[in-house]
Length: 464
Image (cartoon, rainbow, N blue to C red; front, side, top):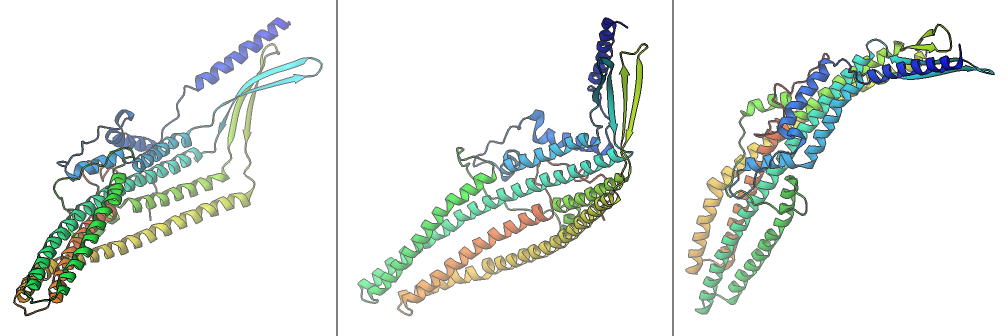
């Protein structure tokens, strides 16, 4: 064979193999059921959260906007939610990576002594052992489920942060209103003391006592006014607004938290829906998938290839086949033991999470009952009686039957009761929000989440 024919064969066979490799780059692997379900769920959430890869139009927040608009704004704008969303999106893509074959390899071999005696381009493909790719895909699929529940938990925490800021700012205005009313009352008491002093019925000490109380209340009022700035910063951060963006106006009317579930169903709903528990259940399934994959370490991997000696006439084809030898039994045993330990740790974390959820529910349920009892006491008995006591003390002071100290003490008691009532209302709303969002896992309206039935974990390995 002359040199020209040899080079022609080299180029022809090399080009054929290169063409085969390039053709293979357009191939697609076989998708697994978990992968298809993960992509379907990703498509559902993306349609609500990031349609066409873009953030949807945000609600225009005004004083007439309902609280639901503020919650929707935060759920679509909060960067922590966006980070959790893209973490989940990356884990969904990793399912495809995990179930795919390794890239094929172009090979080249030549025998050279004084001259080139053989030229052998080739193509080789590695094949993991039977069941390994399926096990890898299952582990990646379950990991994507865990990432989804992390995303869902972040959405609920963002909604809770909005409600927390909203209630604290609203009730701050209530505290300021009460303090201003009490300040006007103190100014009236000071005028009464001055009038009594002018006619010689009391000393100037009563006037000073009234002024002392006024100064104390003015300072408290200034502190409350100043506390608006950090609360506004927290509310702004809950909405995902940057430093350059203005603080939106609060809704013009107050909306109380509603708990649509009967108290006896909250714990059952929490065990069925709480995203943190669901993430732990997914970790148990992922640990089981990792254990299945560890057992596959006993199975050898294979490689198949074909080379062609283009200098031979006719062309000599050389098939190639290799297999790994999993002979290191201590290594395989260690991999299996590590996977078993990981599964037991995940199961223990799930049990601990269930216990903690039960304890949290018991604590929040007690807080809810306690704050309701306190509200009933303050609104139904203490505040009305304190108001009546103040009227009696004022009349008694005008008639000289009591000292100004008793009048001021009665006024202070009424103020403390009214502020305690506002604080109890704050706690009641926060406890209800905690029970519905963070414990029961019930999302607000328009939340960019999967429906409850669609968010069930799909796996061949049920969580224990």
